[in-house]
Length: 327
Image 1 (cartoon, one colour):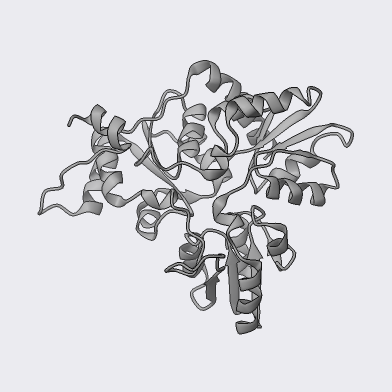
Image 2 (tube, one colour):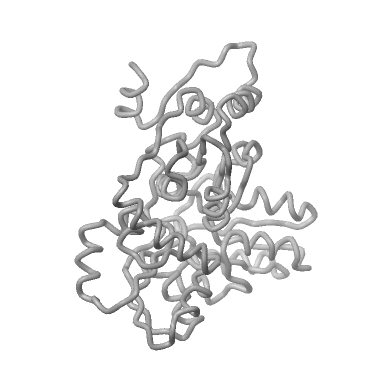
């Protein structure tokens, strides 16, 4: 099966590694050979975080994608992140390890239904969370992340009518913090809505000196109990700087790797989800599709490559640039 067929049939490519070769050393060699940079989200597996050139949340990754002078951007994250990099850097080769790494939140806003929804509110400014497709970005006026959503909404006149999409939980949180009446699209992240408030209360009883910290994509019953709410970067900073000895972390479990590095003497506990699973935590199945082997193969063949139609890219670029200007 040739490379194009591999991408079409399975969404990723494979590459042989000679027995005497070390996987991480080969990834480093390919990066230098192809002037490539690896950008990784905090929710990636630990071994991927450890070899990344930059690790961050959606805002930091967007800023890094716009600023890099590399010829190739390998985005260890999910599909919409690769699209965002391509929107910002159209002349660079943007690849992701596995095209199957989608996003339940992005999928909750199909383009046709969202376009019809916007027609019901023709006089509204559209602010979309970055966890959406390139097509939704192209239909939006401003993009935001969980790091800057409040700041961006606050930057607009108080009487401006606003649609906030696609995450309804983040939208409710922003509406409350800004005292705005936002029109909300009803989308959600499966990773965050699965976190169980009832199990959290039991866990807090077990760790009475702990601080509960939560991502604003969590549901309201979780946010109501949180000692601190913030983006992944803000949660990481809070753990590093707060004096508490224990933290219960209500977001995707991947961030705990960096938290343990930043605060090695503190106890970090992942928040449990409704269903029992092997890690007693909330894992993104899409983020976990990426592996070192797929990164090696992707750098070898520069596939799968991300493409965004130019008319869509130019429209989306306006909304992404508005975010970067306001951040």
